Length: 474
Image (cartoon, rainbow, N blue to C red; front, side):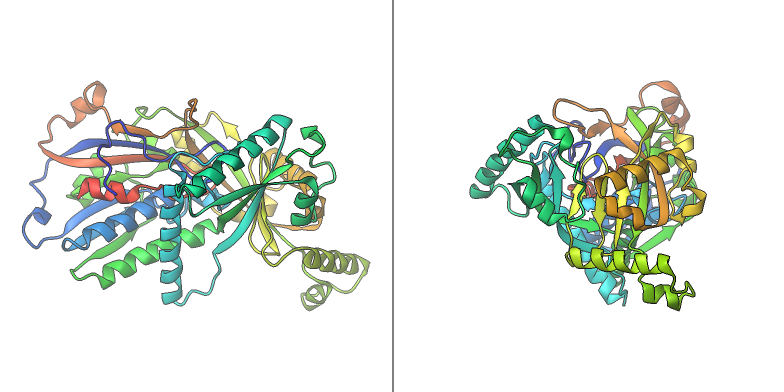
């Protein structure tokens, strides 16, 4: 789908609690001292650079290859200072759905979900072809509990609107329905008895929202699979195509990238919170930087596993064995995830990701230094933010107290300002008409398009119109 303009139209959005990214998209022209690239000659390669190897960068690279490889030889060069899923994307829980906290379908939510499902399917196919056996997609329902009586009424109203949309054919890939307290407890057997105390719900009111058709992804495995799909597409292309990852490598500026690695027909910047470190972008994007944590929790090993690992057969091991058996039998093979202030993304019956705490006021330099990577829990478990998150998760589901903290992930997200319509993305021309940017670039003569995407990953997501970005730079 070709987007008519990137100058003022907003392209994809989610609410604060939703899964898709909030995207800041700007388009400008990046001058170059070099001659027009050879790829403008007949039969020569089109060359594209993507800065940032997270959800947005990997998706943009895939869509660029999909679109441009049909037109002739194409090169996609992906750059990241920390590698695939090294930033905020790697610190996502992996929840993917198109609903706001009030139960409404987000603006472009249906289109975003359809695009996400397409990319997920491509990633799964590529992983299978490469012989990868690791599971990184869980198709499951999700539950959002009403925190207030007002939210309960919002759920009921939103479900009626969604039903009308489905009947009209406007929504196809997603569904949601109101649930009672009893239904919520059946779906989540380990739910705290006090889970509904704060809502003060009237008798017979809607206690929660059941979302069907959602996904939970393992962020790093998924992003690697998307990149594998991009490389396979290049290998299978009719023309000579190439997809190359440059990491770890810091891009110091877009001008530096053109001079040292170019020339490129276009540069797409999907560097997220670190985009502000690029001098051509600097403070042009009004985003707030926010750090979050994800706790990877695992069901404790059984008594037999403990003996095999040399743990002995004492009373403590017996208790773990009993708790594990009870939890395993109580849970479905594909248990639902729990949305809300402290969310629990279920990755099968024996593991989950819990999040998220927030710390605002960070700088772009701090964001660059805080690239996310799984780490040993012993180095983070005593941090106040991590301890508070673990306490909050245990309060929602007390049985998690016996679960093992496998790792802690942290990342910094770029969050656009909120509007009456939610956290809308920015779209337009990156201004170069004032300040040092214009002065610094003025000696350069040749023009190259640059699309800038500073993306907030609230959970996980694939921007719904990266195929449109691909159209815009061909």
